[in-house]
Structure formats: structure tokens, C-alpha cells
Amino acid sequence: MKIQAGSDTYSTILSDVCGLYDPLGLWTPVNLTARILLQDICRLKPDWDEILPESLLERWKIWVSNQHHLESVAVPRCLQPFPPTSVQLHVFMDASQLSFGAVAYLLLQNRKTSTTAFVMSKGRVATIHHLTIVDGTIGRPTWRSPGPNYQERAPVEDRE
Image (cartoon, rainbow, N blue to C red; front, top):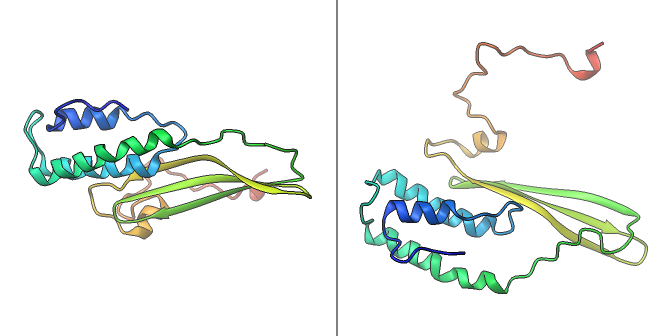
């Protein structure tokens, strides 16, 4: 991870956070912290090259200083280390006022052993507009209608 020297403006921090590439979601908890900070910066509506308040810069510096720990983390990518007799996919989800996310693991078992393997995770920062936790977990705010082109469909078993 490369963080620009002198990242103290909205544009440089935005560039650093948007440069985090993590397609499998290995660092979702770490990246969400940075994205929540970026959202707090956006709430202030700063100018592009405006120096940010010291409280936000301090949070940013703490986040950056903790990134060196990630270099020592190793994640095995072998999803099937032995021939399993049973394979289960377990998905866990959670939401808060700040963010929501999901993680998927495989549970592999045979007569002698069992193991889990990380598949992937995804996390998102909650919208700036306030939603309740129920709205966030259902996935659709209650104030938005389905739109004029919405047609209710019959359940699959009723179709011919």
C-alpha cells in the first residue's frame, strides 16, 4: 500500500483510499475504517485542496501508521486442501449505523478432519442519509418506491 507523503487534504486522502484494491475482501475491516473516515470528511464538504481539521488528520495518521501490520499477514488461498465428503458454504452478515458487510467461508469435512477456508468478504459504508439498521439489512430503504415499471411477479411454482 502506498500512501502519499503529506496526505492532509481531501484530494490526497481520497486518492489514497480509492487506491485500495482488495477484490476478495481480505482487508475489508481495515478498508472500512478508512472509508468511514472519508465519509466523515465528506460530511464537512471541504474544498478539494483544503487542509483538513486536526482531529480528522490525527485519525488518518493513526490509520496509516497501523498499516505496516498487514505485511506480516498470510492468507492461505487453497480452498480444498483434502478430498472432502461434505462441503458447506457459511455466510455471515452484520450491519451497524456506520457500515454493513458479509463474509463467506467454506466448511470442508471428511472422516478424519475438518477445516474452514475463507472465500471472500464485502463491506460497505452506510449511506450519509440516515437509515435504520433494519432498512440497511433488508437492502432497500423504506422511503423508496419500486418505480413506475415495477410489475409484481408470481412465484416460480405458479408460472407455466
